[in-house]
Image 1 (tube, rainbow, N blue to C red):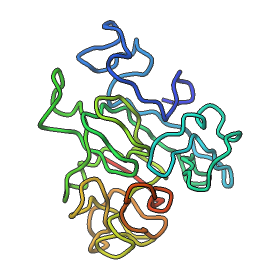
Image 2: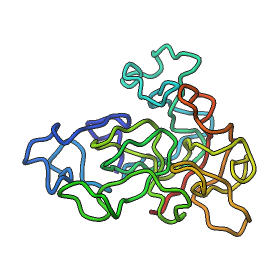
Image 3: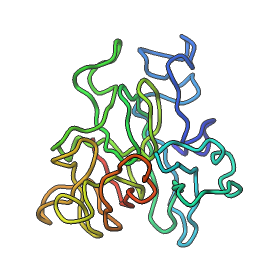
Length: 230
């Protein structure tokens, strides 16, 4: 489904209190509400070469800059802001609607939770950051901005976006052209595979720059092609 035809923005987040009882079904947002059901995927067709389209900006902490959402071209971006884009010549993107039962940081891998579930949720409905050494096949997608606990949001499931790596390169860490796996050392982050034949969920499109330290998201996010299957 094309998210451009939906009455919301990729960077929006919603709390359960945002909805009336009629708009919620078992804490999953129903099709009668302003979004859709949990797990619904929204996408867009491929862009022609050279036609990147900025959707919104995040600051160097990973937070969405609200002023950039409605008209990104007119937003006067700071040098440390990061443009979240639909990238030209890279195929389509797919974004999936999730419920974050815990805080998720920009660039972190997400999986469906099987324990410590919020009241009213069953296995597979709520999500959190992937644990250290998580299985490649459990990656549901990657957050492109910070997502607060107890909110509904969209994460990137397929296409070009950003991840966070544990180190600048090698294993752990990532180098351009290397396949990606969940980090064995830090929850939510990625490393590169040890061998080319290993399973992966994406490919690094640039070298990693080390782990985020608090206010340097602009230098620590790594552009990557993502193809999550969780």
